[in-house]
Amino acid sequence: MKVVYSILGTFNSGGMERVLANKANYLVQLGYDISIITTDQQGRKPYFELDSRIKQYDLNINYTENNAQGLFKKMFSYPRKQKKHQQNLTKLLETIKADITISLFDNDASFLYQIQDGSKKIIEIHFSRYKRIQYARKGLWKWIDAYRNKKDLEDVQRYDKFVVLTQEDQGYWGSLPNITVIPNANSFVPTAFSTTENKRVIAVGRYDYQKGFDDLIQAWKLVKQQAPDWTLDIFGHGPLEQQLNGLINELKLSDVVHLCPPTKAIEQEYIQSSIVAMTSRYEGLPMVLLEAQACGLPMVSYTCKCGPRDIIQEGKNGFLIPEGDQKLFATQVLQLIQQPDLRKKMGQYAQKNAVNYSEAKIMQQWIRLFKEVLNK
Image 1 (cartoon, rainbow, N blue to C red):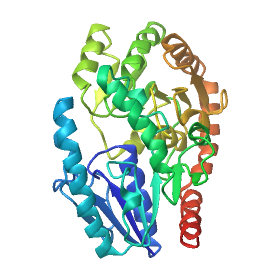
Image 2 (image 1 turned 120 degrees about the horizontal axis):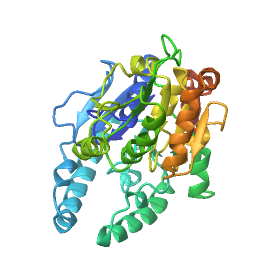
Image 3 (image 1 turned 180 degrees about the vertical axis):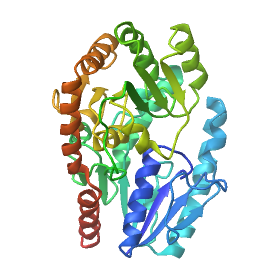
Image 4 (image 1 turned 60 degrees about the vertical axis):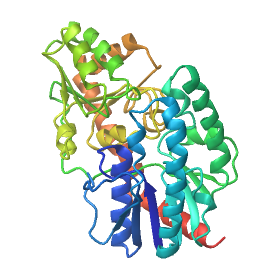
């Protein structure tokens, strides 16, 4: 079976890129013919290792060139890039002759279903129904986001299958006939587990508005007052790094809160930590929670849309905190800090719960979906 994945690029260290690499590697090892088509790779190597049998193509569209432009320049340049993207992607798909083509809800989402190359079309979203309007942009951008949010609903219904990550998100999209739920799988099988004895909390993610690390740093000011010997290490990079560093210095937390660069050895960082913290404003199904859970860490997370409610069982493997409640967030982190037996018990429960997200179990769901789509 020939399967094509379409994504902006594989050079980032994000959860979506990690999930794609794991799925593609798994399928190619089963004998699938796998191709990945990008638009903005620009000669960069994939951040996560890809099997040499996976074919990689780049269309040289470079949407990211628009990022620094103002709204009106984007309104002129984006349609031109979309036209070029559709033309180049159509030619390539006609050459590949795939059985299934999968959009990762990037810039092709609005037109991939229109391409008549003979392949079945699947679209999968790694965020939630409300990902666009949760940018919290102002003015004209707010109206554009609302329009695109409405357009998303129209577009996904035109695909043979639409895959969301959580039961929660499925409910937000409504009773679409083509919708199905397949969660992300664990990124790795841990070689060891956390003892939950190190005085360290870990957070992972891009330094941007979505991840809400400003809230986490604010909450840590309260944590430090009662647990000054515990540290918070936040692994990632992104546009808000300078701003977050400024906040850390302003709150006099530089001795206990550290911004750390991304690492491919993230498993070891989880194992050397005792709690995972997440203050995202929106998610799809956060890989950081799945990874930390697999390593035996108790979780403290905002109940953002979507994902934490599907993973965390309140009081068993972690705590769910209403969005924006920094005080309660700090209180629950402190409860775990001050009660090592509870920390250990929750970590053990998390480790057992991780079995539900094993790669073999999740990939069998994808394989059944592929067969279902082709047999229609």
